Image (cartoon, rainbow, N blue to C red; front, side, top):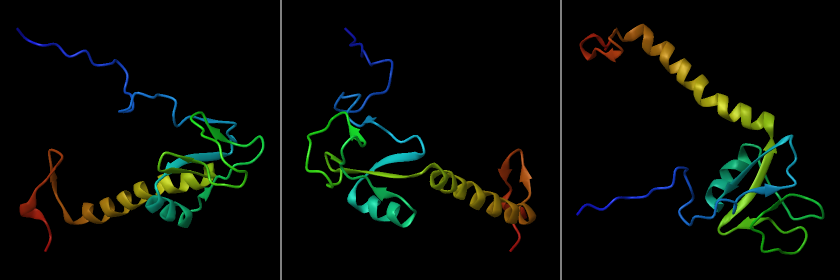
Length: 123
C-alpha cells in the first residue's frame, strides 16, 4: 500500500498562520520588512528605520500590543520601513554589479552554447 501526500496548493508558513506578518495601516510610500536583530543593523545602514508603535500607525495583524513608542516586534522579528526609492536602489544594485562583472568577463571569456569555455579564458 502506498501513502499519498496531500500538500496544500499554495505555499504557507511552516506554522500554517498565513496572516501573522501582514501589516495594517501601511503607508503606501514606504516599503516594509521584518528583520532579525542582525539583519536590522545592516538595513539601518541602508536607510531603513525601525517602526515604532503609535496611535493610528502601522500594526501587524498578529499584535500582542505594547506601549506607544516601542518597536513593533512579531516573534523575534522587528518591523522596519524605508521609502520605496530606497528599496528600488537596493534592488538595482546587484543587477548593476552583475552587468559590470559580465562586461568585464565578456572581453576575456569565449562562450560556447551559453557555457564558459575554460580553455579560452585569458590568463
